Image (cartoon, rainbow, N blue to C red):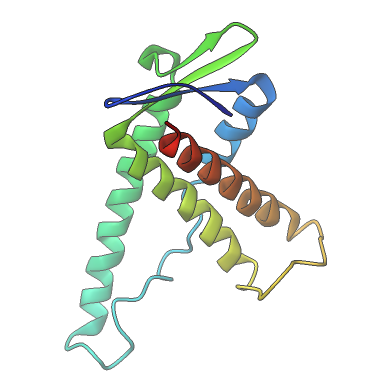
Length: 154
């Protein structure tokens, strides 16, 4: 992922063919954070806490549905924001969309870590059960790092 151009409106990045496939695949993992993992408060700390938690979960479900629609739009050929260019692809990320894309990638990264049991340190054992979460976590971090780096380039 390399910066092609940066302006006040956003950035345009170049992705190789394989990198584009990986970017789309990691975004398709969204949402990854388990429903109910984000707690409003500890049990008993908020009056009518169960109802408040239900409302929070519903709001997060709505946000995730809206974000998935955004992703479908971003990755569709009709949007023109991800288009073939030379030997690869150009991805246009508008400034107002950067936070949303980073948030989606963060959900995949942190959600995968939670699904792995929130391990401390390096993951040393891969299995058929853990490998997809390790892959999603690492790839989401890779793309977050490159997007942030490109946005900061001058």
